[in-house]
Image 1: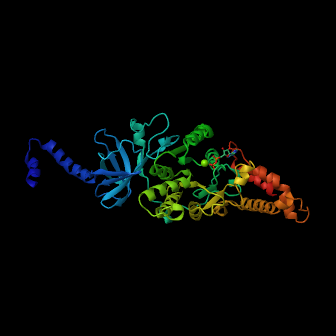
Image 2: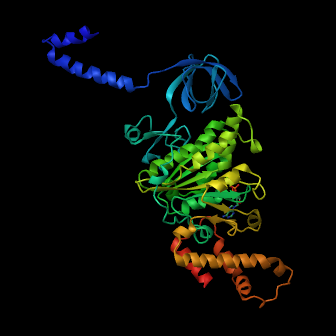
Image 3: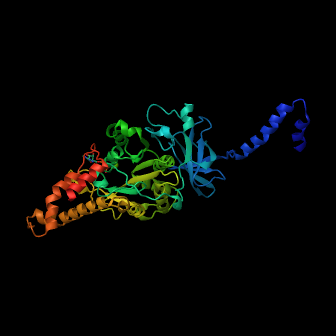
Length: 466
Ligand SMILES: Nc1ncnc2c1ncn2[C@@H]1O[C@H](COP(=O)(O)OP(=O)(O)O)[C@@H](O)[C@H]1O
Ligand SMILES: [Mg+2]
């Protein structure tokens, strides 16, 4: 080896070229050492349901592999989710179509990433990073776009707690019932709870249009295709679309892809936060993320616990939610709203319970209000922003406290009023609550296209409170 290496040095005729080569070789060697070269080729052994058992060694959980059909050359991405006896168990991230026992398994040695960049604004992508809207993906063809995209991990770590900025400022969402009475802070994480059909998705689309966030990332997890289409083409206007990145995985997609939509949306939000921007991350719905995780966990052989949810879900939920929030030195924030499906009062649902405990606030939608055509159907008194105290001005807090008090008083005597049993004059504060009831309801009701400016909202709140 060493004699071979020294031979060119002694050759003076080709001195320049060889010196250059001598320079290059160690650098190439260095590059090679850093390049992922271990293409461990295993084989698909068995396909059971949605899971693939493969004989492949040296892979780890979370690792991205490709399954390649040697005849057609078709490639499917899959993730290692467990091991059984001698086999690695993989879950495909895309469609299973074309997979056979002929398929080869190629390990990549890394977890899946997603390409992010400013050019994502206004676009709709799949959790695999494919562009779902037209014009078609320039990522593979146009050098300009390829250069502006960079890959970030799908499972990123949250910023270290002590480096995170303090939460200090409100984020206007354009919805009076929230801005005035359940103010959301920049960097806060909120759950939007409600039964099916009470207007969760509609409220999110109103927030996309009305919020003052610089960038909105919308993660649509397991929605029906029709709903996605309606949201993007009908409910959002061009201005809202321009500052929105949408990550979509509809209900017909494989579980791992649906779960990934929430993770990828978070990765995209992290990218913009790290640019110093105030990002609003909306995930619809967290329940469907949990159900997708349940499918994956049970298929991998985990034991079912509460409502069939596997233990890994209760690790995955806080890991996902903790990634939102204020960032480090960049000064950017991710304010996040996750919709959570409830049945009845939601006390039996482990996903609702768990998220309520983790998040910094909850907005509760009421089926009763929706039935009375009161939209947005926000149950103001049942909702609570744990950070409103921190970010609202003294005047704002006082006015909001007053209105909440009037609403609570009205609720207490509502039944009596209906049966004609309440006598005016028995209590001055209750009389005021009854007198102002219509004005408060007027203030709280808002059509989807009506976005209320924050200052204007506080002005109206003051007028009613005085
Ligand atoms: N602001 C609103 N104004 C009028 N109707 C609304 C409003 N929000 C929701 N709705 C009604 O409620 C229905 C269900 O809303 P949706 O957002 O799909 O509920 P969810 O996402 O909670 O299942 C809508 O089709 C619409 O008829
Ligand atoms: Mg919905």
